[in-house]
Length: 257
Image (cartoon, rainbow, N blue to C red):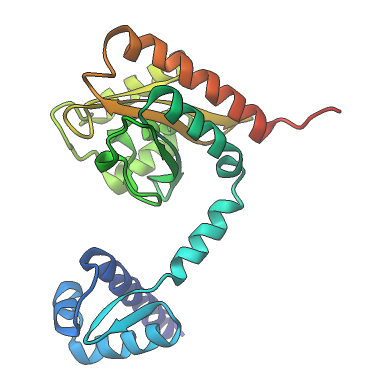
């Protein structure tokens, strides 16, 4: 029985290796994909045949790519999440008022996942990030806003699993510095990303909480030359906090009437 369990786990791992490999390559033939994921071509072909039959993979000529089936699963799940359902109008409001990029993030498996986004008229869409994109939480405002409201033991688990890799010279690189910043975020109510992910980009994020649970965060980001001075340090945080408070009411408080 134990051997069967091990084989089943290995099979599942290989399946996801193939899915992730196609995601990284975009489109690939059997030889290229086999080299990328480290699976023999004959074995890979069997997996691809099964994935095609289950509508997860599409074959075009001699190349393979992911199908849109997984999009359906993610879209359905996202549409059922109160934070996204109630948050969409607030994202549009923030993007329109600031002219920048606004997004909602949640934590999953110790990573920050972009749940939704809106791009204002001046927003740098090249840096907007992908909906569903996963990033290290310590590297940006939206992730740190969530980390600040997780139990210390959970934050330590995330650090052990994902580390504290550096993206720029400003990225937090050690546990003590991170915990000091998380304490500051809890006290003031919002988080900054001061060129910690990409040089020249800044952001402000506020957590969305319900009771003792943090549902996610809402953030606004843009170029450092526009997010600067009093606007960046005071005015923008106040704006995002106001929107976050309304969103919190929408997601966590039942009307008494």
